[in-house]
Amino acid sequence: MTEEDKMDARGGIGAGPKGSLAGLDIVEEINRLRKERNAIILAHYYQKPEIQDIADFVGDSLELSRKAAETDADVIAFCGVKFMAETAKILSPEKIVILPDMDAGCSLEDSCPPDKFKAFRDEHPDHIALTYINCSAEVKALSDIIVTSSSAEHILSQIPLDQKIIFGPDKHLGAYISKKTGRDMLLWPGVCIVHEAFSETELLKLQAQHPGAPVAAHPECPAYILDHADMVGSTSAILKFAKEFNGDTIIIATEPHIIHQMEKAVPEKNFIGAPGADGNCNCNICPYMALNTMEKLYVALRDLEPRIEMDEQLRLQARQSIDRMMEMASATVGQGDLGPTDLAHED
Ligand code: 13P
Ligand code: SF4
Image (tube, rainbow, N blue to C red; front, side, top):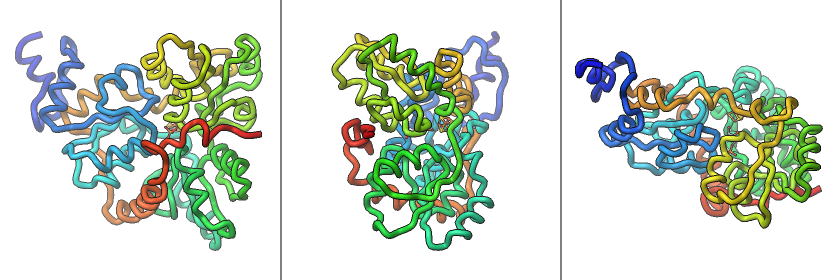
């Protein structure tokens, strides 16, 4: 590689798409660019280990929103999926928000087209819309209050009991908090393809192989998985539980990349990903999150593309429901994490 090729691949401030990345030390280049750009790298727990390790902050959806709102960086490099990067842009419009791969979507977002959601709302004018953050900016703009898995129950508890509620787009999260709080809600029929892929039969087999090992599950799982869980909570809550539970083996029913943080925090414990129908947890890797790579993160920091852009009217409308979440979730413990005790599954 000639010096010119290296310069070409490295690019500079304002450089456009350049040539081959061969020969580049990607970690060194990301570290150089993050300083030059005054960028913060945010990563979700479902990102590849190398991306989690280079990030300034790794967290669940609520924690990442809070970080995006409070940072004084000029650039937010969001290693997660599009709805998360959009939320960062909605909260920090003056910042450049980049997403390594703009195709990093979400099956829940896809399940809830804004026109159909609006029609559903119009059919139920006496209901408010409590909407999971895993949706498009357009659906946020059509919603009253956004929730995350760590804040949903706490926010629901603040809504008057006689208020009718539409909950979307995740029917499993909606059913879980509905059962836990005893409140009826009209559920939008969306699902997360990753959490839907767990197999009850294989989970029972795994439990038989590891008697006494608790199952920690994300509330995006179907009820037939949650029914076997000892603890149900957001990614942060599952991580906290994994660090604190008394025992050496735990079964994790959520996207398996979170196990990286567990192994770093408590390497002496044994973390087993809950299986899919094929008996292993490979089918539970989120295909959207997996689109982000270190190389794409480097190119995004170099070119400041792909960039989240949003119509200002849409941003302001979507911001209202997110601001309500931020206010109503403010009483959640620590960094927006209700923790295993509060979210523990009760039969
Ligand atoms: P949390 O990290 O907020 O639990 O969300 C999980 C998820 O599926 C994100 O897409
Ligand atoms: Fe969407 Fe599920 Fe992937 Fe989360 S894990 S981004 S909910 S498809």
